[in-house]
Length: 142
Image (cartoon, rainbow, N blue to C red; front, side, top):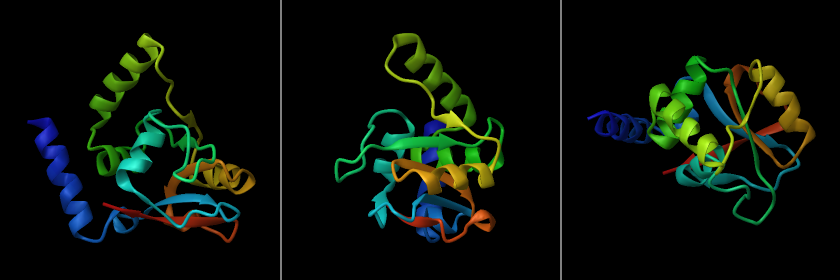
């Protein structure tokens, strides 16, 4: 039942303009990163430690906002169709089995933006109000 709800929520977000317009959430990379867009499943694979590379082969390092952050909850519901409880269970299993670790957690959007700006391998999601010219917004497509 929860998976059905998450899929419906994801479909609604995509129908009403995609991830970039859901609330004030944007996915960013360094302004020096050549990417302009990613599919939602590619973004999810990077943030769920299923892929450590961008589609062109470059290294990808995901950054997270704090646990309990509304933006974090919205992000994972949007790209991975997973609630906070499902994300907790996912990471418990990944860490226990040695298959992966959650992304590095930063205190907020400004800290995430600063770190992404310094490193073209990093990707994060932030509040749109924290944007500046040091990063660029990725178009996230279905």
